[in-house]
Structure formats: structure tokens, C-alpha cells
Image 1 (cartoon, rainbow, N blue to C red):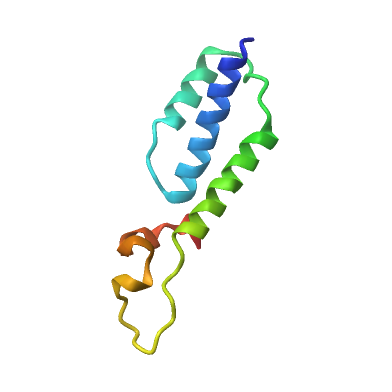
Image 2: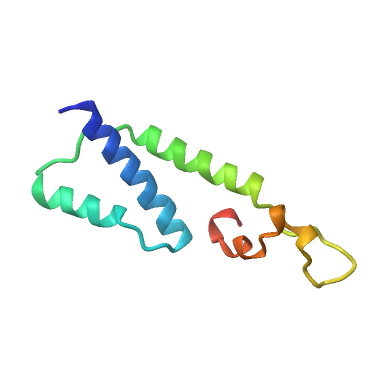
Length: 95
């Protein structure tokens, strides 16, 4: 089996896991299900690579999109968020 197919399957698996954790509807699930419908076995992928990359993406998200700082006021302001993007705090992946 070509390594490129295994790499693509790993990448789609990573996208699927991240998407599921965030509650996103992604095409990765369709790709994986479609592949399994046409093939008897999954490609020889590294589950360690898949899980390590998912973990790294989650760490990057936690470090980039921090929760708001506690302040005397309970009202959130744009200074409490990275780049002023309050909506990103809704992502459960980074909790």
C-alpha cells in the first residue's frame, strides 16, 4: 500500500477526531466511512501519530485561545481574549 494513502487516512482520522471534539460537521467522517465501504481493511496507519497530532493541536488551542482572565468586573471585554475573539471561547476542545 502506498504511504501516501496511509498518510491521507491518518490526516482524515485526525481531522475527524478534532472535528468531533469541537462538534463540527466535517467531510472526514464521509471519507473514512466511504473508504471502509470500499476496502476490507484500513491502511496501516500509526495510531500513535494520530493521537500525538490530535494532542498537539489541542495543546496549541489551549495555549492560543486562553480562557478570559478573571477581573473585578464579570463582563467580558476584548482585552480578556487573544486577538479579541470572544466566540472562540465556545470551543469545548480547549476547556
